[in-house]
Image (cartoon, rainbow, N blue to C red; front, side, top):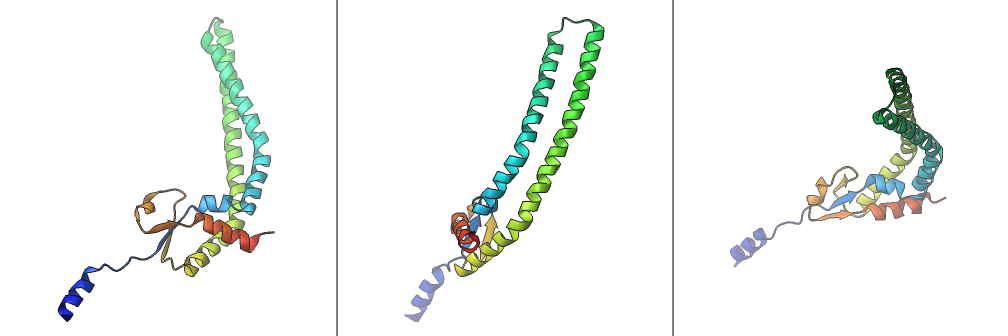
Length: 164
């Protein structure tokens, strides 16, 4: 009889470790602190984006004018030089704006990320999760059938701890 009980016990698979999934990007932007930072970045960079959009449209309009043709060689040469010059300035301005935006985002993350990571670690510990995967950039960890998305719970825990 004990041999049968042992065989039955051996066939029951042990439950795997509890796995948590968190979209770190959504978790950080889902907090009031993250929303405020996002709003501040929008306010700071929207005017620059509008200016770049206007420059891009101007270049496209000039290119369209060149494509239509109907002008002498000297006018084509001058228009081509103007397009090239404006394109160069646009590309430099775009690179500068992108760099400034990245620097501003890094500054925000430098303050927000460590606090969020601490909340996630504590939440995982308190709720018995053995592993936590960030799914911000990949869905690969979703293949685990016993994984639970804790993003919303982590946002709530963050808000509870850091609410101003």
